[in-house]
Amino acid sequence: MAAKYRRVDPRIWRDEKFRALSGEEQLVAVYLLTSPQGNRLGLFSFSPAMAAEDLNLSPERFPELFANVLETFGWHFDSVARVVYLPKWWKYNAPANPNVLKACLGDMHDLPETQLAKEFCSNTRFLPANLAKVLRNVTANVCENVATNVHPQEQDQEQDQEQDRHPLQSPRLDAIHEVNHQWTTVEEAAATKMLVDRGVVAAKGAITAARNRGATQDDVRAIVAEFDEHPGHYGAGALQRRVAGELAAWPPANPAAKRGDDAKVAAAKRDAERREHERRIAENERAVAEAEALERQFGGRLDALTGEPLRLLIAAAYPTGTDAALVRLRRGDRLVRTDVLRALRDRAPPSPAMAG
Image (cartoon, rainbow, N blue to C red; front, top):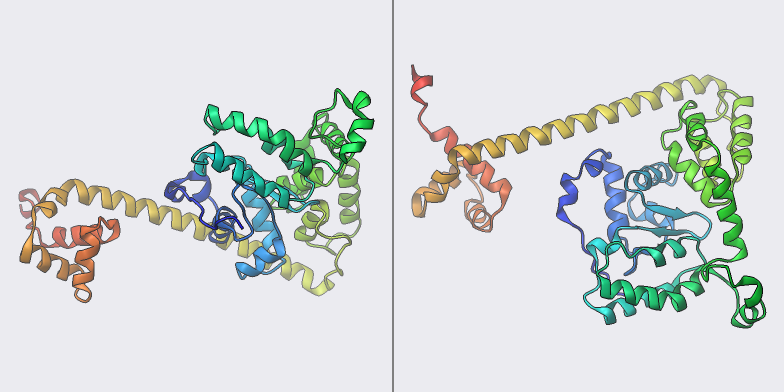
């Protein structure tokens, strides 16, 4: 079994895309990066139901959060094979040497057939030249087993007819690729806008999931038409899940008396979440600005303190747990340092300008 150690760049907490997510969406993103369902490749089998259970999220809530995270970071989910792919995985989890990479690629034997295998096998963007060469050499044997179900003897029989076919392709993948090609010939944004106009939050993610499962534009239009035929009967979430293929049929219609209230409650909840998210971002920015200002003004004075004067200052900031705070300060804890700088500021005499 692959080791469960995973690298997560701490700079993610300053990443604009990550900070734009809600708290629940950030939790889902970190889960995908460190998931117990994951492996050493960033291409792994994934059960949304298991993830929802692990994160203590409702099965109804998780798909929307999941779709928003995928859309934000450009991650992919094959909803048919139930496989997740994180294209930048090697950037943060690069194998130490060619032998380690070969061992990692062994994880592909545990994957079902998935269209994402082809993209994984061709993605050498974040690998050094020697590892990229290993990936290309090994994937001819490894990725083929994941991307196709064609047996060796069948390949021999069809070699003449299939000599122009990429080794990762299969009839099933060809059909999906053809659907995706059809999508590129129309304005994908128009299909997304259809869902946005009907209140779907993760519209783009739903369209991507529809494409991945082989749905056509006509399939999506038919679902939207059914939604429009029964105004108020179904919520935007049901429409999103129908398009994404997560619901095989429409759920029971909402009671007429409850429809309006549900819509208002949902809108108020979204608005409250948006305001809370904006408040947290603004609060974090203020805290960072304050810490930087304190460091500029009092950082040198704090660094010059030692012994009892330093201990007394820390006690002013941490009346209880002074010793623990001192240890954390010496280890470079930024939060403790900021608190102690505040205490130093409060004890500092006013400037002449303020005194005048």
